[in-house]
Amino acid sequence: MPAVNTAVATTTTTRLTANTIEPLDFRKAPVVVSGDNIYVAWWTNNTENGNQEVMFRASNDAGATFSDKINLSNTTEADSWRVETHGEADTVVVSWWETNQTSDTPVARLSTDGGQTFGPVLRLAANGTISSTDEETTTTAGEG
Ligand SMILES: [Ca+2]
Figure (cartoon, rainbow, N blue to C red):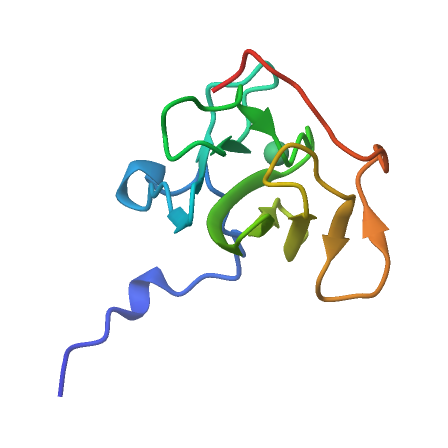
């Protein structure tokens, strides 16, 4: 039976955020290829607000050119990370987690035009949307 170190027992509760663990251990940039479409998403804290944001780029010509990166999450109050993506033809969905001291929420955004524009952020654990921008697309270029 393994020894149990009771000295570490504490009532302190520390919630997991992308910045409280080593994010480099978990970094991924999932890629989808469907016909001439290539979709790539990743997350980075190299952003204006310093927290983790989900970035996305698409190619619609078999990788000859890629669109500028899009900040899909753009949430200043939460780390946006653990991104996954899947797509077929012109439809692509990008999902990730919005994590801060009080919540850990899965969200997703959907594109039906080859990753050029995205619908609003869908809060998967509860019906409805989040994000202050319910516009067709959130394009914050120049980050990540
Ligand atoms: Ca964020």
